[in-house]
Image (cartoon, rainbow, N blue to C red):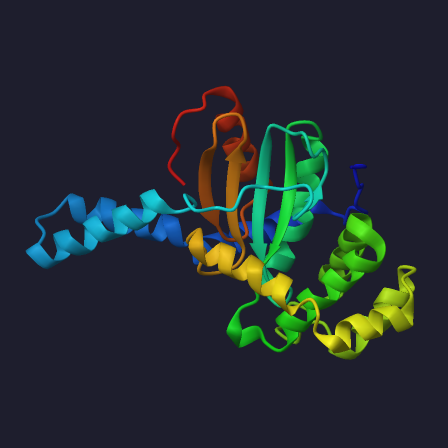
Length: 256
């Protein structure tokens, strides 16, 4: 599979400033971890002990049911033989996914042989019908133009989506396909038929089984031993790098 090179947005510093700002709000695992740590330092009621134990169990099981990465089933950006995959469950209407997208592009540029990027759909109900239809459109792009077309289409949606919650206008899905060189009539037929709905829903169900409940949901997978590290939210590039370095250097467990 040929490696795809993204057109990188500039400047990255402004993107990372926004990512740092939003990370505290979205990283659900860290919120839970802080809750556990703070409560363990003080006496707990029986009910609180039960709640903390359940939260620990949920954290320990996150990602265990992740569907294996597949070059035939997944959209993989970068080196398909990289030792680590970053699996992202994403929603085209999610403003935090929009913020994270260029950061992962830069992250992969810094680590071209060490990690690849796997994009899976996780459209949230309150972002529909937009998120669902955009996800289907990206799959139509893939059907007509392969993996490279999927990533070009995906990159352009995120690049043009407003961060104010308005999202990407559905009437622009067809012109965008034409713009990147896809057959307009074939794309229209694919999109109108809803033939990609099953593929999008399969990704969403896979995410639910892996413990994903919001976007962006991130799971690092080390293929050599199946080790995983689960996180969430619009992480800064430095955090992505530290997780990757940890996986490749020690192979030991790391708190999300």
